[in-house]
Image (cartoon, rainbow over all chains, first blue to last red; front, side):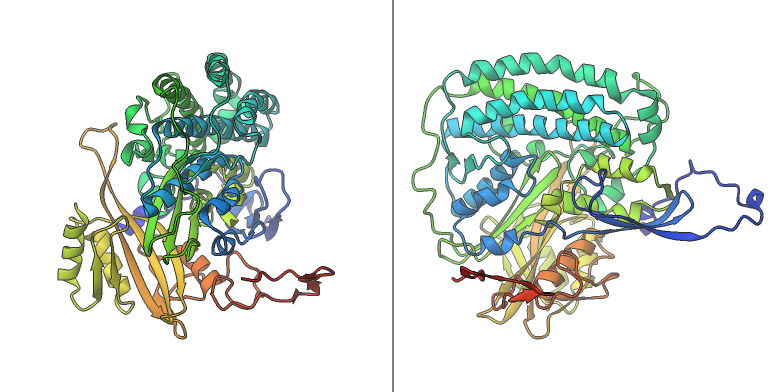
Length: 400
Length: 178
């Protein structure tokens, strides 16, 4: 296997004429992009070694949000640990609950009733839309465009109203449990949901007009920290970050779980600039593509929710009996779910009692961020927020 | 490929290192000795029939009764489609468990085989104390640099204070009792 395909080439857009600089004295500076920073999407500390405007080396330091979730998991039954999964990737609580619930069900062999599965899919896809809206809004804000942030959060309010009707919470839902969901959908939920989807679908084209093809935005994000497909797989990237580099890999299609094989939807991959209205500077695997994948995925999530609402049985139980007090068999299980940020994996090892022996959460942002020190060499300081915003990390699941 | 076939290939190539195979169940895995783990990792990645190019997760487990520490490596082999623009698929899927003594926990690092392993191994060292030989950057990742002990070990003593910050309140110890 050619090891040199894993090396990152220095950014060719940066053009320094060193000879013309003559005896201008340059000095390397160590700059701290500290844990409190508006563009690091949480408590992330990056130490930059810079030569003027050029970053020679970037070393991320994590652990500021480590809350010992896995240690807590060794003292609680799985259904008691579900609220901790909410707080891993706090912007995609339903998806975290979903992945954990399926991991426990795989280990214990619990069957989930059909109506519950459809409700789960609806909740997970609505949360995917909400999470991508935050990513879209905050990325625009990082690049200096404040208006998309407000539009994104306005749409998000409608989704959070739907979630509040479902389970009473706006951010940390604890709704999807091993064995089903906590409550049935309230009356009138279906109409409200369809109303929201009809309202929201044309908005995605509005956001494209607002931000995606904006000249300044494209110049700041096109061809910035381009990651190739081999590098992406070698570093364990997943989710829109991986798909932007080329591989058409989505766990909902590759390893379908929870009836995702019954729905008809597409998986967007990175686009090359120069045709179909995509600006010329864009290459597959750059920051613009990582951002654009999320907009395209929101459209597909709308499709999935519509189909789920159509196919859902009108009544039936929403949780499996006795799923809360189940004894975990000896042995292990590992399951990954497709979260908005990538593949969230749970490794559960049981020892015959009700409490897991070991519970490990593999956060997608943890793996996505690990490429930072290798990829961020010889880029400009202004490209750093462009890169971090495009990989869309949430420190809750980096540090757990 | 079915897990039985994958594990058979692994057992035929490394008959002394693979101590146990478990092809049935929800988590098919092989148990491998740590001495030549680096060679086995290269074989898993480079062999055409296997082609495990994606390391999904390294989980460290503390089996205190057996006096072992385990590192569980979950692997995927991605399959490119024949027509460009079609979905990729999973060619192979397996897990490898490596057991080491609790008192002498050394496993060869596979960070040069799968660059994902870099941070995962740092986390396994930080939380469980498994030392990965040959790791390019062996330091703690989640805990502070001057933290004492490995928090996810079963016999870990929670500290009563850290740099003057107490872990005791007027209601009593905040150390978990279980």
